[in-house]
Length: 173
Picture 1: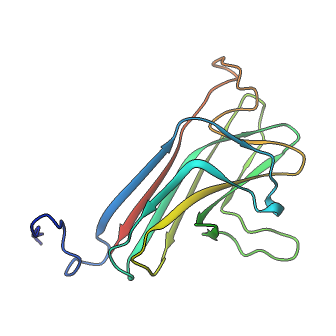
Picture 2 (picture 1 turned 60 degrees about the vertical axis):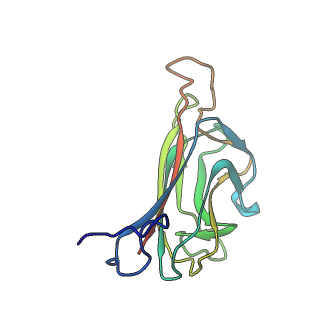
């Protein structure tokens, strides 16, 4: 099927097959972030891991992909991560009276190791207004969780490696 571009307006909004990628928005965070905010307090939005997309149709879905590395103090055996549309969690487990809903969690391995994480969600925002997606991070009580760094962060190859966190949004027809 050939696509016809109409002047400077780009790809037409109608007539494309379902599943067509209409646009892609990408953000990358290369610096670090830390929080001691616990998951029961709602965690903390990770600054710099945010992207905004304006869907072309209310029927569009947004594929949200996020990956990176997370480190934490030894007093924290795990850190919790989740995606959000604005401040509304998406793609998380159903919470109950004793368990919170999260997208994934990373486990403490060593003060010199940052654990990899990956999150994805196919969201239906049902709007043609701008929509902002964020990554949230929550530390287990009594510790600090980090994005893009280890606890040690001492600059040695063995104990202080740093990573990058990427957030990709794809509008799907």
